Length: 238
Ligand SMILES: Nc1ncnc2c1ncn2[C@@H]1O[C@H](COP(=O)(O)OP(=O)(O)OP(=O)(O)O)[C@@H](O)[C@H]1O
Image (cartoon, rainbow, N blue to C red; front, side):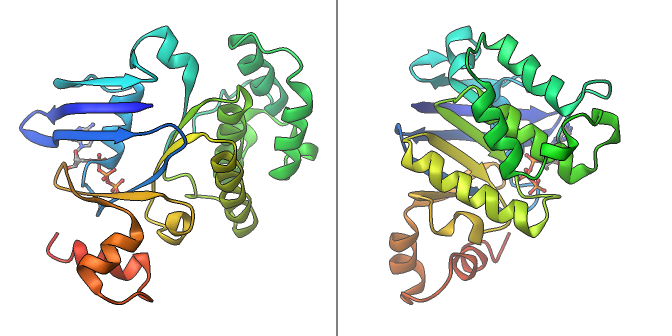
């Protein structure tokens, strides 16, 4: 469902992503982990077409990632949520529904607003929303068109504990529906139990790419060690 071959992204002399290869099968949930500056956000931004890659090929559902066909398939939830200052929460959802020519979208929109405690705030303007509320709106908008592939970049940042729990539940539901998910996060426990696999990046490269169970076996030998312990062990000289 996602194929990345030889992705390179430089910022002047800084090599942010260095010949990265990645492949996600349909229905796979993959956690993208790595220390600050490892290249996670840059990788995701290149995949969704927000940053121009310097080299490499990226396909989503078999289509070039910049094609309209690819864009119909995926949703991107950015690290810093962008909302329109002068649109209400309801307007944001209507806008997405129109952009994707959705019909009969209102029941799902109501469900999402309810899940994120936004029903009583639906008439608030974007400029009047808190950071966490913006993040919630960004997630609701991303889910509304029922994308096949979802790219989440630090989705939990700014969310309150209830919304974090809700987002974990949404991950679980999306996984059950067979969606393909790539989620970059520092909140390792948020993906530990749903990720089929984790990719750990360091200095622009994927340095580990395996199931949590297999990484445990190879590098810790301790079946009880958490993914967080494992991550710290695997990136300790970063
Ligand atoms: N717009 C930019 N201009 C110049 N350098 C950048 C830019 N964006 C990222 N970088 C650099 O590229 C490298 C990778 O950054 P990136 O934001 O992808 O890391 P990350 O793994 O997402 O980090 P974090 O966990 O801190 O969000 C870093 O060295 C960063 O300084």
